Amino acid sequence: MNSSSTVSDWNRDLATQLIPNSIFLVLYLSLGIIGNSLVIAVYRFRMKHQSEDRFFIPVLAVCDVTACTVCASMAIALNMMQAKFTGNILCKFLWFFAASTTFMSILLLTIIAINRYLKVCRPFGKQMSTFTKRAALLFAFCFSFLLGAPSAFLYGSVEFSSPDMNLTGRRCSKLKDVSKIASLAYSVLIAVVLLSAVSILIVLYGKIGCKIFTHFKHRNIEIKAMIQTTSTSDSRSQDVAATPSTDQDTIKLDTSSDPHQHAVIESHDLPAEDCNIESHDFTAEDCNIGTDSKLLNRGTDSRNENKKTPKLFTSEELNRNSALCTPSMYKFTLMFMIITVIFLICYIPKIFLIAMEGRDSQFWENLSSSERAGLLFLYRLYILNNVVNPFIYAFMDMKFQNEAKKLLKCIL
Image 1 (cartoon, rainbow, N blue to C red):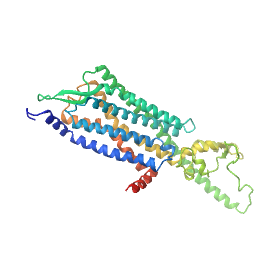
Image 2 (cartoon, helix red, strand yellow; image 1 turned 180 degrees about the vertical axis):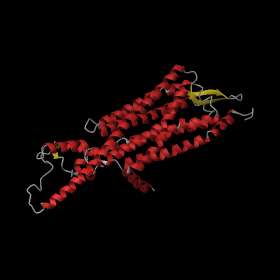
Image 3 (cartoon, rainbow, N blue to C red; image 1 turned 120 degrees about the vertical axis):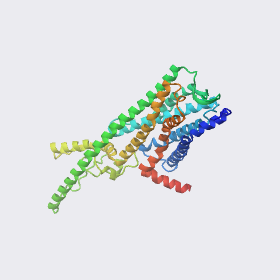
Image 4 (cartoon, helix red, strand yellow; image 1 turned 90 degrees about the horizontal axis):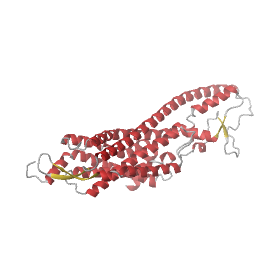
């Protein structure tokens, strides 16, 4: 660039160096809006009465499409106006809204992790009611805006000079006249919130993973035991096939008016209505797959102690246990675990860069063009977290996949 270059030429040169980064941002923006809008439309028009497991999905889609639109658009604007960003109020608004929507997505994933932990690891304990979930969402919404508020005071349109020429431009960045202590404190606060969320997610999903592994390990053993027991029973029944039995039509499920009706654990034919705890996706076939090892063990111990008096369980216990055993339950848990793993991959680089930015106010200015482009890509990788979720739903949720196809056929 020659000495007669203007600020516009300088800005164009800086924007050109960030074209690859801008292409990724346009891709993020396009896919994020299309994918999350499809999720919202499917849940609005095709899946109005979704199951309890899907309660957070449309809310997460709204957060994702908002965060993706704001953050990707802001990043594109910053790339295009590296030296000509003169809108101070616009800069403050963009940073505030980008920070708030980002924190909202993080807090929502944390709430989802807590909900899945209670359902999988504490199935007989107190669960999150609809009221509790809505209260948690309201808290996350308010807290995210409180966390984003300091951005409006720390960021704005800032003057900076070219090291190689006598030119002065303006860009949307952290204000230089802000107290270093305040800037460092806010960076530490963000890092603490992110690290706390990451730690909670890792611990909760780690316990959930162990629970699922243990459950399926015991269930495989129980299925083999039931197959062997069934084979033995069939061979014995052939020997006494001609012998009439008054106990042939013994009712296994007490149908009295008592709301806490009891069922014999030896029964493997739970009715379909007992499977519908909080989800409309549970079927009778799901319940027949297996029963939690604790209940089977209780029944086995009872038969060993007194073969004439089988162990009885309330329908509520069987219902909640059946919900724990369904493949649908674990499929949704696995889906949210994958979403969380992608979140961790996308946010960990930003945590480190925020810490480095807080320690050195001239961090970005001291980088070369290629270094700045590479680190900006890592810094904005968190936007990818708001883009991939619809593709995970489409891959792992067959009901959503089918309803999305029907909706697209109607539109097209």
